[in-house]
Image 1: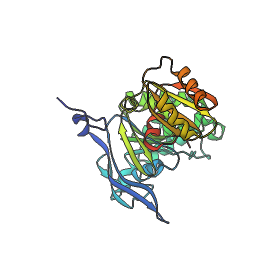
Image 2 (image 1 turned 30 degrees about the vertical axis):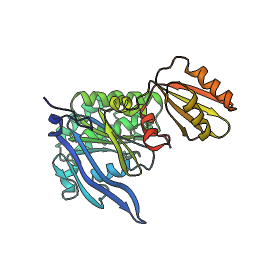
Image 3 (image 1 turned 180 degrees about the vertical axis):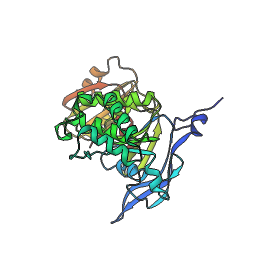
Image 4 (image 1 turned 45 degrees about the vertical axis):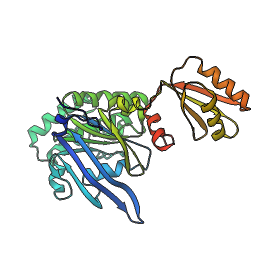
Amino acid sequence: MQTARPDGVDGSAAIDEVIRCEQLTKRYPGNILAVDRLELSVHRGEIFGLLGPNGAGKTTTVGMLTTLVIPTSGRAVVACIDVVARPALAKQVIGIVPQTNTLDRALSVWENLYYHGRFFGMNAKAARIAADQLLVQFRLSNRAKASVMELSGGMAKRLMVARALMHRPSVLFLDEPTAGLDPQSRIALWEILRELHSKGQTILLTTHYMEEADSLCDRLAIMDHGHVLVINTPKALKESVSADSIVTVSASGDLDAFARVLQERVDGVTRSQRVDNTVQLHVKGTDGVLPKVFAAAEQAGFNITDLSVAAPTLETVFINLTGKELRE
């Protein structure tokens, strides 16, 4: 019987790695350390997320794995190919969807797919068939002859994902895939990624949206300042908080002192800390907790201006690790 590893991978999955990073490091001029000795393993067929605030090192990590950024040190292997030693070969087995729109504006929607396939060595007939099939799969058939300039942000992103899949890559890399999209377009793209996942496509995505990582990822790594803080399944990470609910309180006055008051006087509080301009409480059991918070605040002379209760989230995990909110 296989036993689970701390990063959420069992023994059988560990032998089917499609991405492996060993001490992967990137230091930019000016001694700026973007990624620091990254250790990472992604196995075939999973959606793996890199979650963290802007500047955490997510995009640099994807850049090194996709040959766009040369590591300062360490090793990166994708689909059994050393991406530094054999970048040209590595490009054949990866599909990339960057943050910015890189569609060819001189070509139609269909032509963006067709010529991408031809560039990767597909013959004309195979490229035509694949382009037609992808337009159907990505709900873009009625836009085949349109200029890419006519597409909405959500449609353009779907076309970029379709283009990245034209040559049937082993791994699909998506860097902040839904950044800037409206909620409806974001949900539509999530549905497509789940569809790809159900067919066995390996996907690595970066995001700073905790709900996106929670909804899509089999496993994820939370990053900050170039370091991986923790790797596990979203479920296991949220369970690690050891709280039934998270109470967030806004008040005037010395919030560090207020946090100590609530920790001492409110039953069930297992942890209390200042987070930016609020106090966050981890609470075991929720019966009567809000009246107790108000009573403790009044007795200590603090005026509560806002209060909310929520279940533990991935942002809660991040705050536990770093003491700050995930979004920046």
